[in-house]
Image (cartoon, rainbow, N blue to C red; front, side):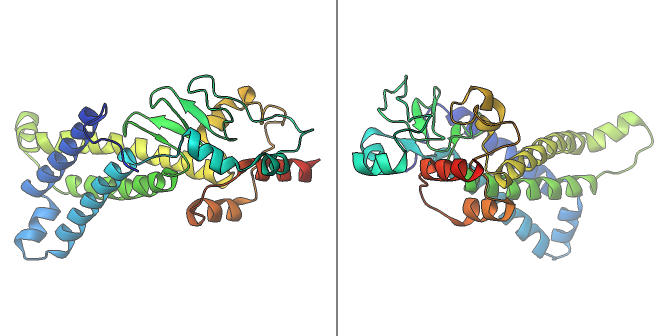
Length: 268
């Protein structure tokens, strides 16, 4: 279920961990609202903030190390079932058909799966390969990825407010930089990450609401089962509420071939 912690992404995971705790220590060591509350014995905010940061780190490593939905030959056969079930799932006179992966030679690549050349596996409901977590985002970890982004954004926005509360005035700019230099650097780093995470989360929530993936949205003109549709048509779209319910509440492997041909027939 989980990949090797000391794999190719060890460096980026270490950088993430170090950067997180450096920022947290700066917020606690400087004269910020967090530090002042701690000195006054008001421990609720410091404890909650620390737990939020810890939760974000735990979610990061979970999403980074877990299986995103790799398709292996044995499980693929079980997932596709017998040939009779496959014929019922994908009508013989329908197009496009399931195809063989040209990289890992998987005989029948499930619909919405894509081969990731970095991970060297086909991934179910492939969304994208995220370099920051050094892992694919797919069917098994996409929901946790969204939860991680949400928690991370809350921690970053809170850190932004805490760092702003620690700035002090000074007579000259040089003296001001000497006093507030570390906080200013922290504010800039947290501000950039907040903007990136907010944009990323917004894009993902939009795609989830229309039951699309980043790969499908960006490359639909090259995807055989989507390029036959116009740009405003999506055979997997069941409406915003159903799409959100299926994504966050239905923790199971989906036979997208069935959903596809059902949606296709309903639009004919």
